[in-house]
Length: 153
Image (cartoon, rainbow, N blue to C red; front, side):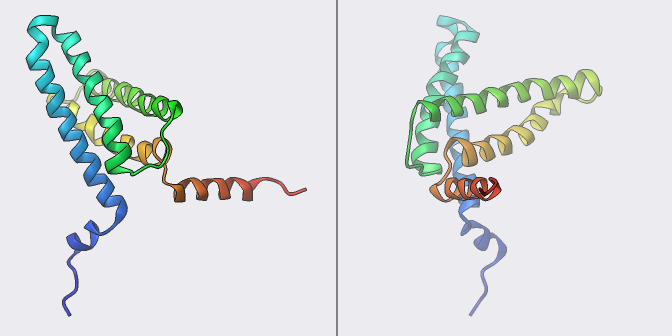
């Protein structure tokens, strides 16, 4: 019997499958944001067009991450808050890293956005998986860990 190669074995791991799906949602949202931008920027201006694209695709992103990527069981206003808080922090990182890269360290501005992506994509995935849309297994493990750390009376 032939052993599975490394790629085949990796693709069978749940977290790898989730990361790939997360990436696909990201690519879809990026393409849709660009489409919305190019369809509307002449009528409403570049800033509003970009904001509209982000708003609409973030709603799609919530839905796809909830149903398709993480297959979460519960959605609430708190989930919505955590989703936008995560992306808010990510946006701050993506703004600060190029500033640091170019203005403080004096490095090439052309690759600054790529460095930001190397940080924000894993950041978003980890926070989406563990905080925004935790699986029941993850939630139970965290609660068990918290209970075991509490002092016993």
